[in-house]
Image 1 (tube, each protein chain N blue to C red):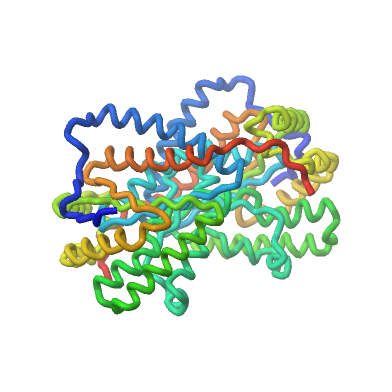
Image 2: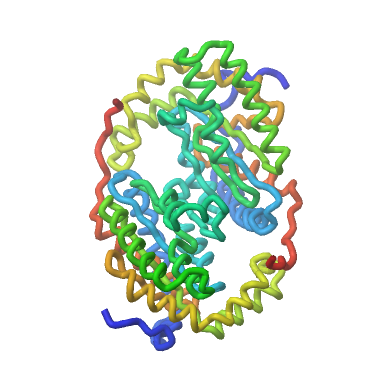
Length: 250
Length: 250
């Protein structure tokens, strides 16, 4: 796979695509996703782990709300990863993550993930480059472990432009219903934009062996949601699941 | 409060209520619930714990799917309680439950709950009557602890008739998409119907001090879902929540 260069990668949908038509397709994908999730739960042979990564305001919460809202909440759990607790810091970086992976039958959506440990931590130089390399290897081994146990791992990078991000952060500051999401730190973190892009590019180059990264143009929510719904539906279709027959109690 | 006698309590909607009209009202409640959940999450001063109890096939899963599907999955987690693990059995009965209560900002829906420890365990005489009484007291203290920490506790008993239950269990045996839900044990457990009703009546009489039980006629899904949506919306409205202003990073 050629190396991904983010500032040469589109953040918007191809011009010829019509928003309304895409939205209709997304709606159909939602119905199919609901059926597939029910099958996943009933069959309980596989699990689905969705990893959402992206800069602040790249629309991770929106994917949760507008794509995974389609599925039965019984079979879907959203796991946000924030600043680790003191206890979590005393463990290896995968400890808190491993605990939260989906059991068979379930979909878990990671809102941020173990990748933060090679992103924010690297950008701020809280870890050295040797540790970064070690962590890439640990991440690959970890994802392989999950995959070999029947988990489908889908990793999405929400690719938003620096201009679009600024606009969204400013909107957070002025919209009463969004103000609570704004964090002073968001604007400071923007200064590290180029370092983040570089760190992400390294992640894609080093952590795509077991399960590939999907780079999702994310300046337009309707396109982002369509691509993610489509990718999730295709991945679940590929499992060729069937309703199991009667179970006996034992 | 007068003692609830379940076999004198309706399992169906009042005749004068029209199904289509009720469904429209439920739809409006869903939109309101979505807004309120967003406020709950943004404000993060309160949490909501919804406890669903009822006989097999009383429609607990249906409530999860058709009521809580309305909310953003980011702010809602469904927690099913099944047969305790060996480790859980070595702890007090509230240990595994306490771990799963919602933090501020969140809605957790318990599909079965700590009440099973005074229901199935009592009906099968796995615990003695002295233990039952002790557990009632522990449950009340536990719920008080949650309430005093800002959690709204809503407890629903889905009241289904014995005839309706039979019909639903038989449907599970014949519908390919539902077969996996059927468990041989369900039919056996039906033999204890009267003991269960008695045990539930005792729960309502003894565990309604801190937060009342809502007895929901559950033979018709549309009516059950309406009543629960309405109760949840009213409880959240009563919190008079507001969007918080800008947070400062620290």
